[in-house]
Every structure is written in C-alpha cells, then in structure tokens.
Image (tube, rainbow, N blue to C red; front, side):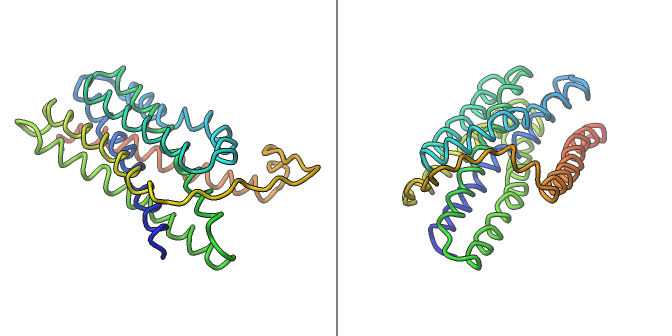
Length: 241
C-alpha cells in the first residue's frame, strides 16, 4: 500500500467517523430530550436524504473538477454540521447536522473512490485499492460511535449530561478537518478523457439485469443495517445504558 493510498483511507475514516458518531450521538440526545421513536426515525432517515439527491451531481462534479474541490466541500459540510449540533444541541439543529454530515460523507466517498480507482495501475492493483477502501467505512463505524460514546460519558460533569454531548459534537467536527489535512499532499489527476460521439447516461445502467440485481441486494443489506442503527439507541436508552 502506497503512502498516498494510506492517506486517502485515513481521510475517509475520519470523515466517515464524523457521520457515524453523529448517527449515534444525535438519536441518543433526541431521546434524552424526550423525543419519540418516530422522531428518531426521521432524524436517522435524514442522514441518507441528501445522499439520494447529491450522488449523481457529485459524480459529474468529480469528473469535471477532480478530488480536492469536492472533498473540500465535504469537509466544510461535515464540520459545519457537527459544529451546529455542538452550538445548538436541540432537535432542529440535529436534523440539519444529519443532512450535512450524511451528504458530506456520501459525496466524499464518491470523490475518494473515483480518485483511487483512476490512480490504480492495472486490474490487480485496482482490486487491492478497493479492498483497502472497503476497510475504511468499517473502521469509521468503530471509531466514530466509540469516540462519541466516550465523550458523552466522560467529558461532561456527569455521564450523559449536555456538556458531554457538546464535547462529542466538537470532536466529531474536528475529524473532517483532519481528513482534509491528510489529503493536502495528494496529487490531482488529469481530467478523464472524453470519447468522441459517446454520451453515456447513468440511467442506461438500469437496463443491465445483473446491475439491477446488485442494486437490490445492496438495498436489502443497507436497509437491514439502517434498521439495526435505528433500534440500537432506542433499546440502549430504554435499558438505561
């Protein structure tokens, strides 16, 4: 693994961890503030809402401008989202934070994977690159909630008080900045060459039967994971953890 690939992986871990930490701390705070399970469900759904509308435009933007501009926008959005939650720990601010951190993570993943895929030399290295990139979300799913939980329990005057949540959000706002610092030295690749007379349309992919099957399998896996993410803080709060 090259040093540049390592920086890209660590950058994705930091940015993704900001979102996963928010996805734990936000619902826990909402429950502590007295909001219902339905409100928590809406809050968690907002993490994915911006990704639905930004994924295709983000891909086009990355094709035109490369890695750094899109990653910079993601860093600003994620840091701003967590910062808003730290400054205003109320339910509407948590909703804004969910929209910003969720959208930022989705956009950053698109730009990082595009850059890493184009930087790979040959099919063998391409498989290695994406195998390592697949580790980044798993690592972030550990780092983000674990760090946020420690801050909530130990950074305040008592476990689970409001200052603990504020410090957790502050930490989560710092993580995207760390990802930007890690990628400052990554070289930008030249724009993708355009094929004369060819205008690819993303919706044409849906005509491929195997692609539709992959989308459906991915949808089922993601849905089961998100249901687990929704139920876990509810059960934990109910049990007094």
